Image (tube, rainbow, N blue to C red; front, side, top):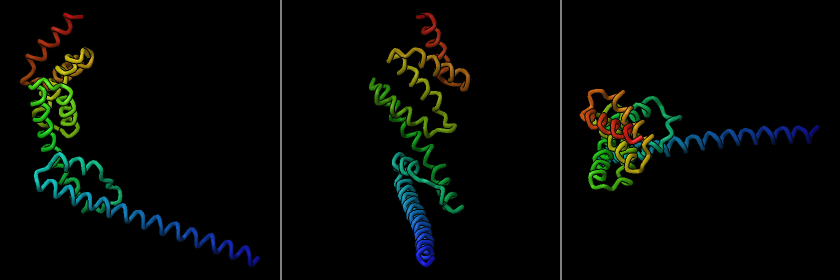
Length: 171
């Protein structure tokens, strides 16, 4: 019985140490994420919005306090639209230079960070034109139809309808 008590005591001590270890790892993880948030804030202050959103995307907010979460959301609310605009501008520039591979990457990234920016329809239009370049008529039609359906006031609407007509006549 003395041996069993010692074994039970060791088991309890081991469980306590494992729990303590988990708590310490959790606190370490929280601190690392808070440091990333501080980095994102600094990047935003430097107007480096692309780096800022990349940093924000790597943060795990599970252990954040309400205050930390509010700060995270505030940075995200500011940085996402600005990063989207930056990626859109680069994508459009690459598109106009016929660098479609680079344009597609920038434009798709811009869409990841947009919510209701006024260039979403243009972004979709450029991506549809790139899909046409890649002979992906299914994707091109899908994107054109999305513009017609979701952006009926788009400045690209005439171009979209013309492109859809051309694609439909080709099939």
